Image (cartoon, rainbow, N blue to C red):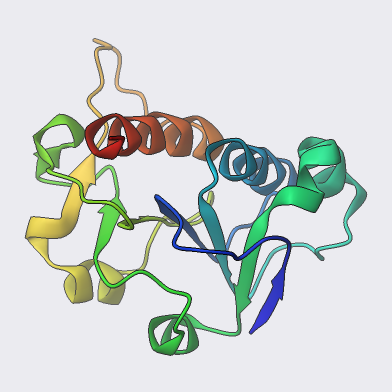
Length: 164
């Protein structure tokens, strides 16, 4: 595991990106995490290098303040002392809406990658009770939101519930 930035104390929230592919999305999620003091976990393999100029450009000066942990795979993430113990998977296949979840401080929000989402085994591991979807208000059959947008929506709902 690689770690960078600030790690002092327990973060209010963990954002977990499973095999992210697009550096700009990861950079924007990193900026969100720095802004909210949330810990960002990246699960390898990544579709880019951490030094990718698009990633750093998206995170800009916030990247230095980011509590970032990179894990070689899902097993290493789950074994890490830096990882959250309670996880929620945000997916278009979630049976429950985001607004139905009762978040607790230190929870982790897991997002699959931009091209394939989360694999079936990850859906099974986290279980139906921990799979959430962001409600769509569109009449059109749209696939999903952008990863960074979805992370922002879910993060602020979790923080709204847990900020004290």
